[in-house]
Length: 130
Image 1 (tube, one colour):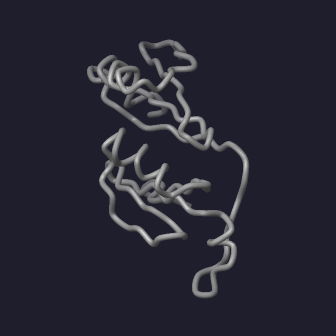
Image 2 (tube, rainbow, N blue to C red):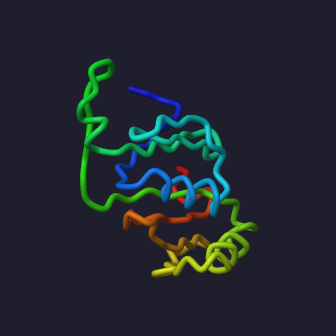
Image 3 (cartoon, rainbow, N blue to C red):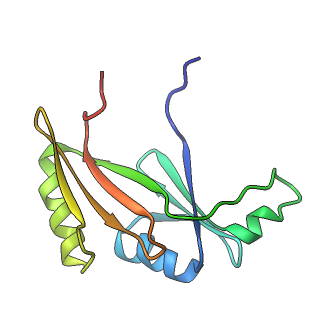
């Protein structure tokens, strides 16, 4: 079965205002949808990051209910020539970089966390290309 990519990724968060301030206010992701007390959505390149209050989405009557808990992981992609700039921008925002890893073959990534403790990673474009 072939798909073109993953269109949406979902994180479950505890505070929508704090999530909006982090992803939109600090990281600069475009805000594309918001329902107070339920969710906030952001555009990230050609993908969408969905951030839900777990308890609210679990009670959904229109769409299939979904929910989760615990720290999740997702990675953002940047061009290799922009990698050092992205890392410097994250650090300039006062967001600690937990680890930088050299994957070999010229590819690196670095890790940091959002306000809910989700592990975020910035990877160089081409890292997983075949």
